[in-house]
Image (cartoon, rainbow, N blue to C red; front, side):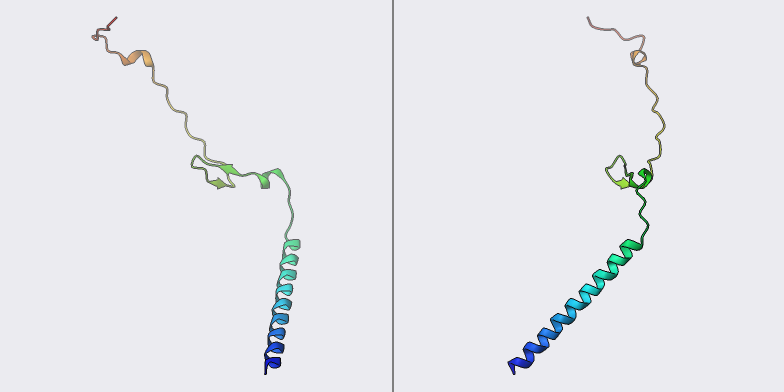
Length: 81
C-alpha cells in the first residue's frame, strides 16, 4: 500500500514541477516581448514634498511674498536701549 502512495506523490511532484517550469517559461517570453527603452525620461523618478515617488514632475509652487522686516515696528513704539 505504501508503494501506491509513494508513486502518487511522486507523480504529483513531477506534475507540479512541470507546471512551474512552464509558467516560468511563459513569464520569460512575456518579459522578452516587452519593449526595452533605456531613455533617460523613462528612468526619471520625481519625489514630492511628502517623499512619495511619481513619474510626472511636481507642479511648480508660486513664489512666496517677502515681508519687509523694517515696517513691523509701529511709529509710536519706544525702543529700550
